Length: 95
Image (cartoon, rainbow, N blue to C red; front, top):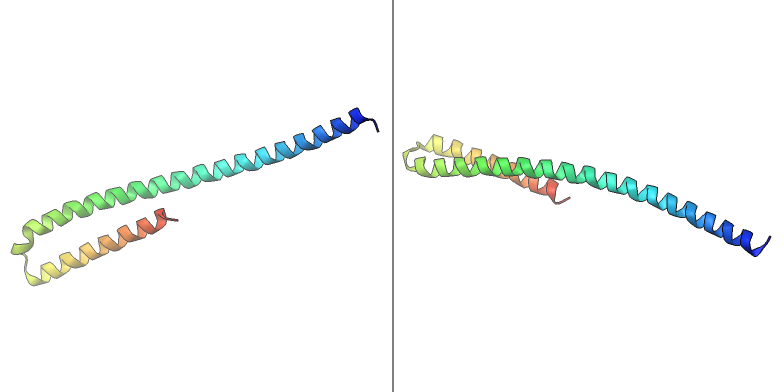
């Protein structure tokens, strides 16, 4: 085998390796784009939940003095549920 043939085989092998690596990287990019999309959706849901909690919290603060003890407990339970939902969304985002 001549030196030129050897160089061509080496180039061919390197080219095949680069094509394989490129395909792997394209698949990784696709997977990361999908992950990004899911995280953006989760972030959007979290933002909406946070806004709702903020609004409800401000309403509860203004009405707190007027609430009966049972209503106050129910409101606190609802706030706790919102906080748990926010914590769950944060955990999803931190993955």
